[in-house]
Image (cartoon, rainbow, N blue to C red; front, side):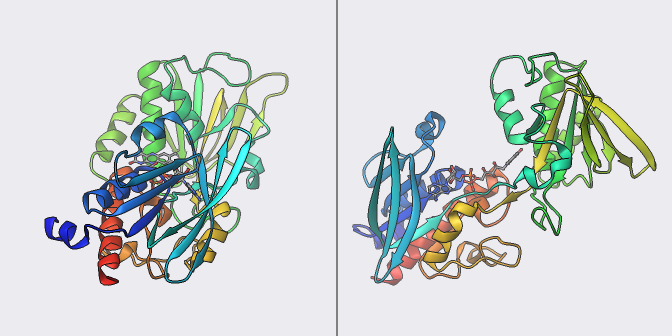
Amino acid sequence: MEDERKACAPSDRKVMVIGAGVAGVAAANALIDLGVRVVLVERSDSSTLLRSTPKGEGIMVLTGSRAIGAEMGDAFHIEVESVRGRCRQRAVHQVDAVILATGLVPTDASLIPEFGMGRHRNVVSQQQLGAMLASTREITRPSDGGPLSTVVFIQCVGSRVEKRGVPYCSAVCCAGAIEQAIKLKQRDPKIGVYILYIDIRMAAKGQEAMYKMARQLDVKFIRGQPALVAIKPKTEQLLVCGENTLLRELYEIPADLVVLGLGLREDPENLELFHRLGVELDREGLIEASDMPPTSVMTSAKGVFVAGSASAPMGVAEAEAMGIQAAHSASAYLRSRT
Ligand SMILES: Cc1cc2nc3c(=O)[nH]c(=O)nc-3n(C[C@H](O)[C@H](O)[C@H](O)COP(=O)(O)OP(=O)(O)OC[C@H]3O[C@@H](n4cnc5c(N)ncnc54)[C@H](O)[C@@H]3O)c2cc1C
């Protein structure tokens, strides 16, 4: 790595990293170590993100800023829109390579109206429950602050489908639901927790133990996605109705909170940027890249690399490793052009 660093530095070559999640931050840190200057652009301006973004010489961090457009010639000219209070400004940054670490966003739950998201306040996404669990406050029914006696997780909502979502497995929702179920049980063992699944996909290290722990804590697993989430008239309680496809029995579960494991897809707001950069998508709508490292970080556009879940759903450790890989590939690309 030292040789790679010397070969690159001193350099006025600059890489724009778009997205400051785990992959983007790992890529930016690795680029700085390699002696490459970085512009890190992140549309969110949350304080948690600000704490984790790299600082120091050789890096410009733009938070509250979204990469929206690009023009290419000898270099990349990336248009970035920044929002400061009521003020919206646009600037063009010239860089020599780009790393897309833009992540994925949940599929649109309104496409699956039978699960009631947006209609019933007690139907939330895994991401929303994650925010509730991150706080030390007691978790209650969103509609009226009432106590939770039963929570139902519905998996594969808008994923592994041909219509109304994405065709691939979103990879992180089974582990996400089980982890959240365990946290709910640890907070209050009396809460009834159900996970309604198609298959449980948990192959990563430590995940089988997590699954066993959930079973020991009496989390109930039922195979079969429900047909409907209804609301019991004149109450705040939901009724989850479906068929247990292992036992071939119909079920109706009264629930205070229903949590949807929504599929993950590329952010539609980024598609124009990808197009302007010459980055193609594959048949499943994800950024086209090989599935074998090290070429898995290379997109169809020269000088544009992809890192983390922007390429496909993945866990944190994999996203971080891919960020570092993308930094090394971008640095090698810059050296090949000097
Ligand atoms: C419900 C759920 C549960 C999960 N549970 C687990 C788990 O238990 N274990 C695990 O390992 N992983 C889990 N994950 C996966 C984990 O969140 C991802 O691995 C990780 O977030 C991927 O990091 P990333 O940097 O690739 O993307 P992200 O973390 O999504 O970061 C992408 C960043 O890019 C920014 N961005 C996007 N477009 C632009 C733009 N045009 N301009 C500027 N900024 C932009 C976004 O604001 C965002 O901050 C879970 C994910 C979900 C959704």
